[in-house]
Image (spheres, rainbow, N blue to C red):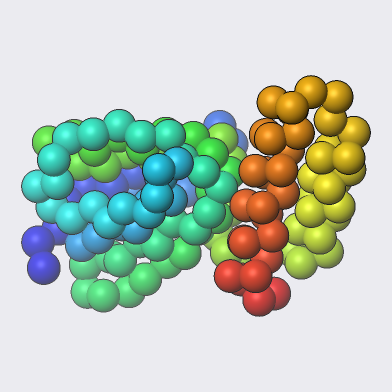
Length: 133
């Protein structure tokens, strides 16, 4: 499979840079797989797992909490609000975030606030289920 340049950057650090065969991105409108020569696009990200298949077939999974993905003729760049390799996720910390999100839903004073808090809670619960940690 043909390779293309990919970078995953968070405010804390550069998490990945290199040539890859494919990247599965958790776009806000749904997951998308980026391959070499993908049509240019920009999308926001929802919290989820980015799956990177490097040249040679080695796969890495990284959790991202929102951000942007930019597909350009020069490759793919993800600017994540925060990101961590899946194997570094802490089950207790994720459970605490789920509890905080549930509290946010209960404490929301507007319909829009409740909708946003419920969306975040659902995404965290999906992540917890998908990771089985």
